[in-house]
Every structure is written in C-alpha cells, then in structure tokens.
Length: 203
Figure 1 (cartoon, rainbow, N blue to C red):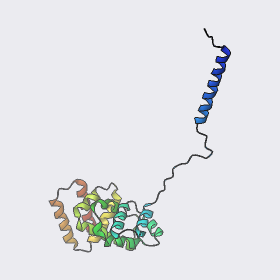
Figure 2: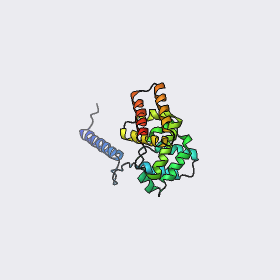
Figure 3: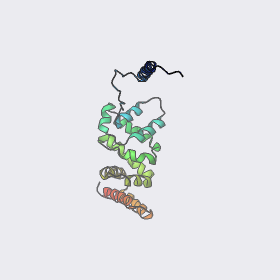
Figure 4: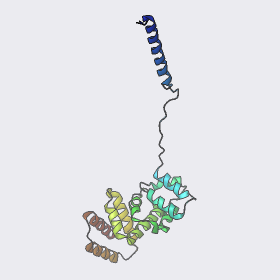
C-alpha cells in the first residue's frame, strides 16, 4: 500500500496556507489616502427662502405666492429687508394683492411672521390679517387659538383690531359678541374673541 511521504504532505500544506493568505490580502480593500467625507446640509433662513421665491421668474404669480406663504413661519422682516435691498413692503403688497390665495392652511405660517414689522410694512401686514379675519372669522379665530405663543397671538390680534378700528367699532363689537354667542367655541377660541374685543376697547 502506498504511504505518502511526510515531507511531501508538509510542503503541500505550506503551499495551501500561503495561497489562502495571498487570496485574502487581494480581496481586502486598499486603505484610502483621503479623509472620510462628511455630508454637509445647507441651511437657508426663512428670509433667504422667501426672497429666493420672490425673485423667481420661472413661476406663475399664483405658484410664487402660494410657495411664499408656506415658507413665512419664523420670518424676521429686518433680515428680509436687508437681503432684499428694501423690498419688504413690496413683498407684503404682493401678498395683499393676492390675498385670495391665502387659505386656512397658510394662516399659521402667516401669523408666525410678525418679527420686526414696523411702519408701512406693519400697516400692510395689518391689512392682510384684518381682511382675512373679515373673510374667514371662524378659521382665523381657530388658527389663533391653536398658537402656543401667547405674545405672537396677541400681536396678530392687535393687528386685526387695528384694521377693524377703521370701521364702526361699536358695530364690529356687537357683531363679534353675537358671533361668539351663536357659535360653539372652546375656551382658547373664546379667549381670542375676548382679546380682540379688549383690543378694540383700548386701541
């Protein structure tokens, strides 16, 4: 019977091990000499986003205004005025002119865009908020009641009251009280109406 030579078996084992190691080294990826890349997320402020939309010429006015309305939350109008080279009033005039495009889903965004409004810009914002209230009292009251920031809510209420102040205030208050009586309102909504009446009493 044939007996394998021990030296031959040992040699074959060594060759097998060397071949296996070489194969593993070939399959291992070569280390990269370049540092790992880190994903960078660009962040644009609300003012930058809105002004970018305002400047676009490849959109219809309707699409432009609708997209701007969705981006207004957190707007700082001083920053916007700086970025736009003084176009705050012009921008708000556009929103007022196209106010028919302002839907209930835009109310929150619009109401959270009152920071650093002053002068003519504040007047224009007041006109927008006041017209919305006249057109959709129930929707505006609900949106204001849902705001968690009382200071912002009161700021918008004051804007609405200022706009309504150009009308017959006595009649406006009577209509509000009647509307409040005839509607099933929750406590936050009642508080909004009460704040509005108080603002009308103390212009």
